[in-house]
Image (cartoon, rainbow, N blue to C red; front, side, top):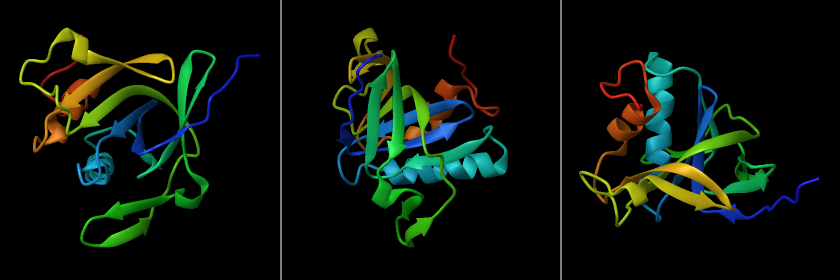
Length: 155
């Protein structure tokens, strides 16, 4: 049996279809805001099934070659909506991460270097989107995950 690691990280996570996005960034960078925008896109039908996994803190587990994410028990199902406070929303107890979104990334660029398009979390290599400080991450994320309304799709 493979060993599993259990660190809690300062991050949010959202399940879009069968893909979980791990959203990292410094405090105030917009992690919860991006989660809320993705949940709204799901409600509008711009994305397939969208569900909160974790907001603010997440437990990541590298196990059998996959990165799993789940909420910390005390924050499960809670989402901060800036200006409205903490709200209880439906959530998934665990999901497989397929991409990392880094908000406020120093290497976020108009034309990113190939080296910025991957990251390693708990020994698992994953595709990455580096979003520069003060850049709206939603269009980049929609394009990368191939939403129904995105103009660009990943090859």
